[in-house]
Length: 143
Length: 143
Image 1 (cartoon, rainbow over the protein chains, first blue to last red):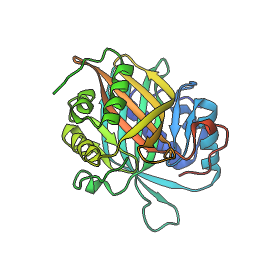
Image 2: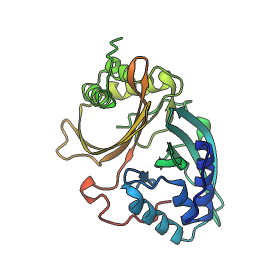
Image 3: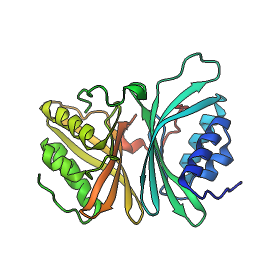
């Protein structure tokens, strides 16, 4: 498996969305830490843990054959010494669909390992509106 | 405002759900870092950033007057030096409702600050099933 060494969390994030757009399973798993503790939540999906579950879900998503394009908006970063947390709005368009899909909010967590920065958490969930409206309207009671 | 010093991320997490159950806004905000970079996503809601937005959303949720009870299941932890990431299933029941609500997956991020461990990210989203089924069935194509 191709194992690029990412020298920054941003490099790992760029490679994550690049692998997603290309439906490249080996490149995708090369972004993730090879660890039982990694966590992946696809929008509306269950929590997947560990390399085996995470890989199998990506395999099935990529097997669907849909080509997605991501525009990332409003990235925000929280920086620790060995862990960095990005939150970002994903604006997703699918080939053959005229309109952008409902945006997704993703929390992406990267850890500094002996093999460079690797993804350890991807938690994605549907967002209610475009980022342009972020913070401009009060949320309703959501719980 | 009451400012408890949390010596571990777990202490901060316990205080977070305790404040949530008690609808105690001051205690809730005492769990969070007082920082422009904090991020809160309630299930189905937009991304809220910074103390002002995060506080206002909690104020509105608590003003709803609903008393919730949380059971946390399947907590998983990823530990950095200054940042710790918990993912957890929240089993939520509301007073007056016979059945538990749809479970929620939460990613909770804590940072070690000069005032102890504080929450910096809470990303909550609806989960499709109970944790008992976690990993037992393959996810469908979710993107």
